[in-house]
Image (tube, rainbow, N blue to C red; front, side, top):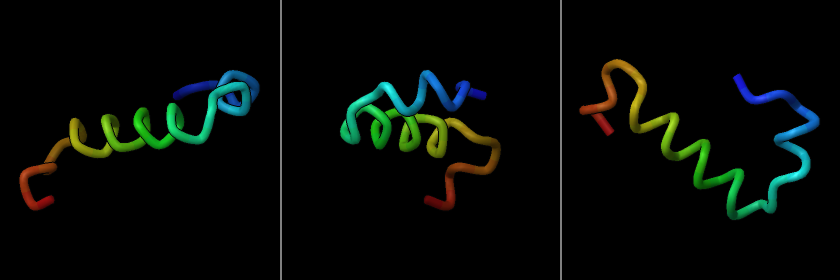
Length: 32
C-alpha cells in the first residue's frame, strides 16, 4: 500500500490513475 505521505504528494490525476490501475489488477477484476 502506498504511504499516505507519498499519496498526498501525487496530483489528483496521478492518484486516480494509480487507483484505477490497482482496481483493474485486483483479483476478480473481470467483472469491471
